[in-house]
Amino acid sequence: MKNISIKTPSIFSFKECLKFLNRSADERLFFVEKERIRKLFFLESQPIFSELYLENGKELKLSFLNKNPSESQVQIIKEYYENWLDLQSDLQQFYKMAAEDKLLRPLIKKYYGLRLIGIPDFYEAICWAIIGQQINLKFAYSVKKSLVERFGSKFEFEGKLYYDFPDPATMLSIKNETFAEMKFSRQKVTYIRAISNDLLNQTVDIETFRNLDYSAAKKELIGLHGIGNWSADYILMKTFRHPQAFPIQDAGLQNALKKQLGLNKKPDLSSILQLSNQWKGFEAYATFYLWRSLND
DNA sequence: TACCAGGATGTTG
DNA sequence: CAACATCATGGT
Image 1 (cartoon, helix red, strand yellow):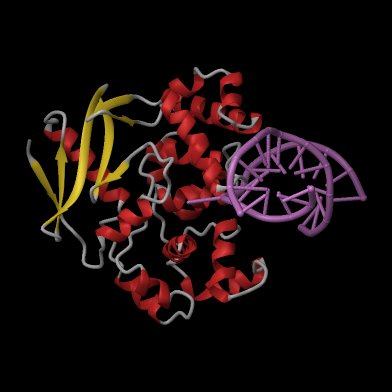
Image 2 (image 1 turned 60 degrees about the vertical axis):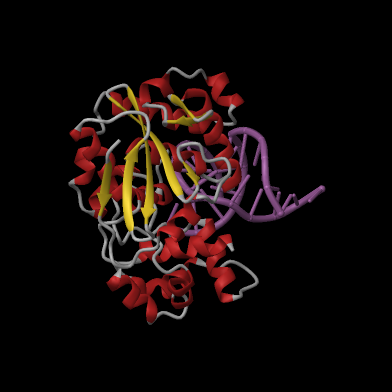
């Protein structure tokens, strides 16, 4: 099996990325095992089981464990990982800004090299944003787990099952009562059905989003039923990687600020705006590091 | 046991 | 435009 090298950027810690990736025991779309990320892809209906690891502590290697994919498939998966771990971004400007920021300075030190872990798949990001609305993360993960275990494509490796996220057609085939069993609210099912249909009919097309700037893309996203301000910024941050995406009303962000500032209640919107005034152009990374700070 | 959770939408005043 | 009701259930 061949190994593909992936270029590592300058401010980068694979270990910090793994720590973030490993935050939920209910994650089913990938696993972190023995300092390696293992993830299943389905390309042209074929399972391709991959892993990413650090060789000799410095060089990122991508390898395939069940078969040798074609060159174009290799390229797709390589790009997926590069996007997922945000390997293309240069963090120097963010770190420079953060070093001057009281709130962020300790975080860039503590989590040095952490990359904004994204969700490269647009449909998965939409569904995850909708699932996560107004419920705690633990619950959100358990809902996603039920969905993925039941309706994701599976592949077994060394006695363990790996999964792919269900596609829109599969999602549309799920009955309302089954969604209810998996603890989806009826509202969320309505949102997901409509958006799944839009993607199948190509009323909504991911490529058009890629070509839009931040505010145009946000406007389009909010036009989708079930995608509000928070979800739009979340998707712009995790999938389209706009550095200024800022899910400002996020409960986790507010709790992180409360914790970092030692407040006895969550800060209000205006004080968050004030704090974040100096983060302009780096709001996504600032948010991500603050989220990270909630875990320890 | 209330209250909160990585919200969104529709209605009401 | 702001304030509230509703969803819908697990976590703390």
